[in-house]
Length: 267
Length: 318
Image (cartoon, rainbow over all chains, first blue to last red; front, top):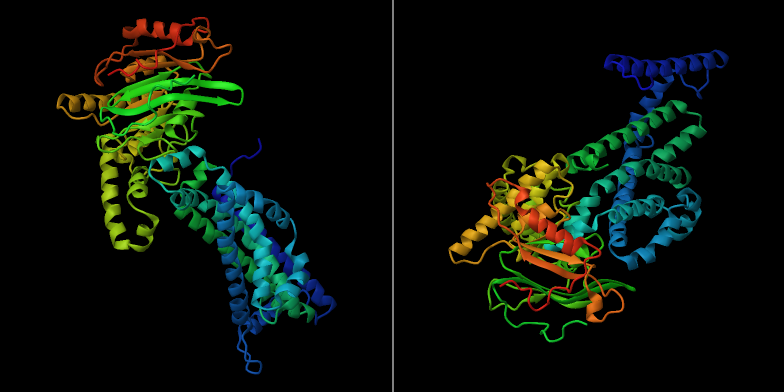
């Protein structure tokens, strides 16, 4: 029989086993590499990795910087500013499109077109249009994720049953109240879900832009340290990015459960 | 042709009337759906609307709710005070409550919030809620208390904090009725409200409506205007006769040739009779109205039984 249930202890043991296996293979790979070339930094051993972590978190007197905090502050500010803009913008556009057929006719074609253009490919155009710096990163994230988020919100508004709209009017709602008190709460969990799914792409676009044009930030650091073959710094950075993505994902899931406990049961 | 002798608007409301349809006709392209419907519903009446499928029951109900206005004619809602002029229906409004079969509740609100939202939308504005926090907090407390009292009336005190997806179909329809009742509309429209429920739940809800009717009778006995007027659209004849006190049959099978039409001009009212009144606690015995059921089947539902429609000026049931 397929999908036969297993005991939860078995599940935990299997999970731990896979992680252990991954770490063990890495150690073995690194060991083999260091036998061939004791100075190798492409597959650093555990002590090299710990040196890399040290280097990232210590205060550098000469350059007056601390990589990890400087990079995190820069990247997170850009990411959250970009995400914030995209979430607010897609919510407004998506609801407007779902509520007004004129807005729908006007915006749906360009948005569905833009949603298909990979933002990374347009990066040179952005540079020419908005220049470098914060504006560039924001444009990159917003351009990359807003169109598809707006379309998600718009399609969610379209599934809103007419009966509920009519009912709201019989309960004395104004047009604006239907939008704010009925449509908005209805699409809110969908918006949160779209945000959760778009954090990954947003990071891809941001890191790509940082790699090309940044002077601080995760993308910049990873590019420079990769060039220097300092993988002892790069790998911990990657682990940190994965951890951050994981954290955001579970935070948004928790938030969604808390503010829209009704949503899961609907689907 | 629509009856042009009747005036289209009246200056003062007639408190004993809840709603009036005058010369209402509707068509979709070349498909004629409703023909010259005249219907006056007295305050306190429980009107059951039945008819064969495709007869335009839904079209008539939509015209009354105001979501899809008729091509011709007017629907007017009368107020309880004669000084207020009756308002012509131009769209869905708070003077008419509606209970749908599906999507009857807002899925993102609990039972209590679903009942209170009408009070919130009707009595406060977005500006109040955003900028007058103190006022809104106080008002909201009152609304929640009123909603809780209403839920207690429909016997859902213990389900107040459940979301619609956590409730049974019967509970949801109870909340939907409470949601409409709390607004004290001039008339409540129920569109196949119990169609998706099992027989036992259906009976409970029918009895809940009969309790409202009983309150109406008490108010009338005390010389007051009754509080609840409703139209229930149903495909179940037993339900129509049991819940209502007046049965309206809308049908496309009527003697339109006798009025000189060369093609069906649309469905019209062919049956309009009082039905026996039941008390909520009495035994629900459908055998009692076997005779009326047979008559309705013949006059409203039978494609071969063509008779003149009900005279528009006489179907007011004073």
